[in-house]
Image 1: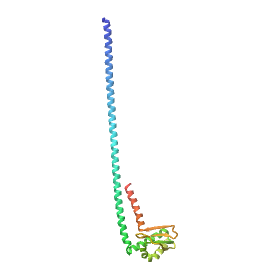
Image 2: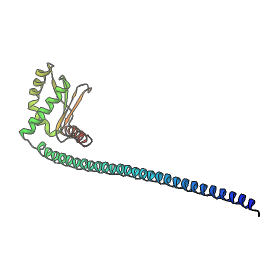
Image 3: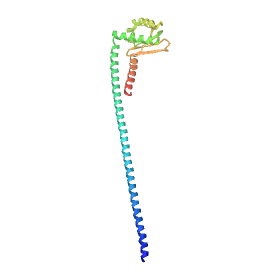
Image 4: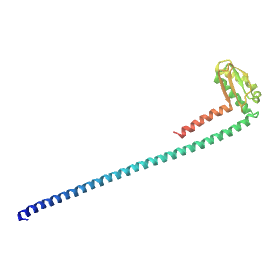
Length: 207
């Protein structure tokens, strides 16, 4: 090979090496840049995953706390309900004993219960239903009740004894035509009070 050809080849090889080195450096730089970018993305993704994990963990924590509170409230409701039921059971047993006696307290209670029902209706011609044992306890007070209702409502009032009812005590009073009825038996009054008490418990529990 002539010296001129060697110079050309040498020059070509030199240029080729230079380009190869340049391309290699560019590729290395590009590779490094891609790697760095990848590491940045990976770090961001890692932080995002960790952040999402924290959020999910926080959400789960709140869920557990909410469930625990709800379970606690349910237990509280069950406990209160048991107390209410037991209290009313005891009260019913005591009232049954009282209503089976000739006590002045019970006689006065029946009189007040009848008066209250008659006033609620507004007086007039009324039918009175009692258990058989209570009829004799209240007969002497009928005129007094009629006059009391008439004085407060300004309406002539007459109480007629109706059929006997099966009850612990108390009375049912209704108009003669049956359109209006007030159930003031002990069972009915206790049931109304129990419902009211349950509503109060529910309001306290779920406020």
